[in-house]
Amino acid sequence: MKKINQPGLNQRRTFLKQFATGAAVLGTGIFSSPLQLAAADISSPDVSDADAWFNKLKGKHKIVFDVTEPHEIFPFAWPKVFLLTNGKTGTPENECGVVVVLRHSAIPYALNSQLWEKYKFGEMFKVNDGATKAPATQNPFWQPKPGTYKVPGIGEVQIGINELQASGVMFCACDMAVTVYSAVIAEQTKQDPAAVKKEWLSGLLPGIQPVPSGVWAVGRAQEHGCAYCFVA
Image 1: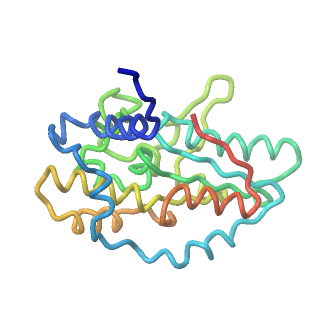
Image 2: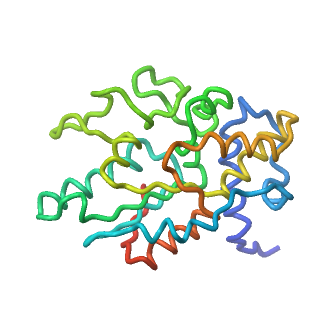
């Protein structure tokens, strides 16, 4: 029988495989219908102000960083590089517009350390503590200690989310990703999906804007004049 190429099915399998990386925490047998869980009657935050949030995006040079996976330090290093190198070519931080979209399996970076510890995000999303090399038990990019991040040839870099926010970088988080991942965990742990999602939304870091979806946000950023950069 001739094999039929099914790109949509392959993408879905890849999506489900990423859930399986947290099997030690979540167990098995939960991956039959995550997209159905996402479509369940789970309330979303009021994102009516999301378009207005994008109106705050100003600057001579503007860019959106599309973050779909943890990708080590790069979701935060690249915005810093953009600001530093624009500064060296005559454009200060206050004349740069930077948006970071946290979506898909990068969503835990938008959440506080209490949730990282409770739901073992380090294990689930394969994020290790830089010092211990063990799965991270707190958000490694929220209020990091001075000297935590160093780059050869450059030295210490301030790439904590709070530090980047102080430089004008705007962060947003995908509500669709929050819906799917919180529902999967809720199903496995026998909790109410709506309650888990509510807990996660209440744990969003200060200054991070919830948006209907990450792809929506990428589109809006580009409509506001941002160049696109995929973080890999």
